Length: 173
Image (tube, rainbow, N blue to C red; front, side):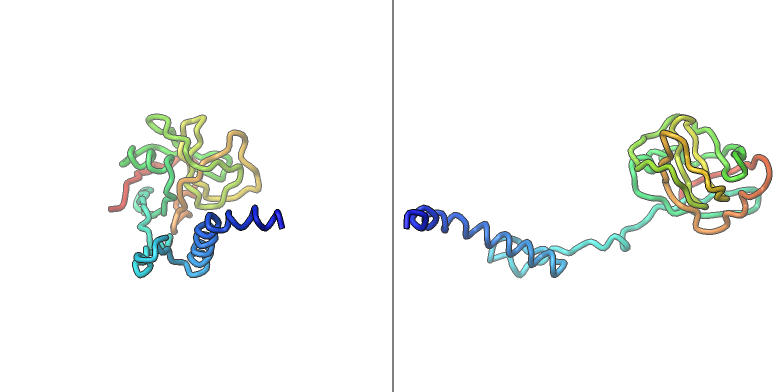
């Protein structure tokens, strides 16, 4: 009986917590967000669909060929875009990528990885370089890894040529 007397006075304090937990679970299951107060239950806050968010695109010109790339939203990518437009000679490295030195180092606020896919547009901070992979040779990337900024949409074969290429990169508006 002593336990019941101790827990019973706590019940009024636990009721709002139980209601908030139930509301949280309801919002998670329905994909909507309702305000915590009863008078606001009719007002729904829309849930943003990531697929609907506008993506940034860049255009790359290699000779008379053009490619586009879809960029990932990251601190590194935004800093890279602030440098555009850029025209430079991209040198070949290992028969798998074209790279060029950037005019300055950019933010390293993107996610690092030691793997890549064909079409990846990346930042190599020790350069500081931008590179685009046009062929996969099965090798991993040495430390500190690369920061993927985006992916070529189509036309990657324009980079699969021996030697260096002159490339212009600009933001698509």
